[in-house]
Length: 304
Image (cartoon, rainbow, N blue to C red; front, side, top):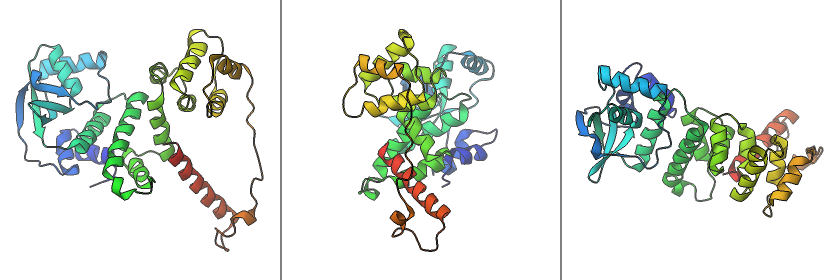
């Protein structure tokens, strides 16, 4: 099975059905039949991280189903007496929108982890716009599934194997993945601002380390009362001072009204500190890269 599920699936099904590529990728039988299911027998996946927006694209989808029928069947799994939607939440809502009571579907067998993977992959491929909050929830969903399935392989608490899988599957850097994971710690008001591009991603990531009450106070001061402004340095300073005790609204306001100067400390170590860890013939550049690689791995680990 290819690691990069998004690239592989899109290559397997250019212009065709997503299921054809997905069957091979996830080890599903490609000997499937399409059935018509009553829409009232369908339920949404509880982990579904994507929003169904009633916008121009939704209206275009509904009109396409009205005029051409359901070209791409939805994908479901049997769950008790109902069918859980894994792929096709928008198509289902669009079919309901135009008054249909049945929908074309492919029924598969899938455990929870496979169901989540199908949910993420198909939505990443089929949606033209994916919001930061949706990316954040997708990363968290996949991270939690991997944490469960690889629990026995990570008895020491380290998750470097999970990091590598996530990097490969989502074709992005480890630091980017963990930045988006931090967004799941934001209050809803900040998350909405991130989605609407009214709050910079790096500022949001720093604010995510604050307690919910502190975030609410920051939001009120900056965006409701407009008493102060906030930038990355100030957000980082709030994070630093929030570590040991909860900041009051007055303390937060004081931090946000004072200019922040970032202290830069040099010469913390000298080369002799690293000699017992580095091979004798390694250059300064190799030593530096080795140390930075370990620090990056450590940073990602402590921020989980």
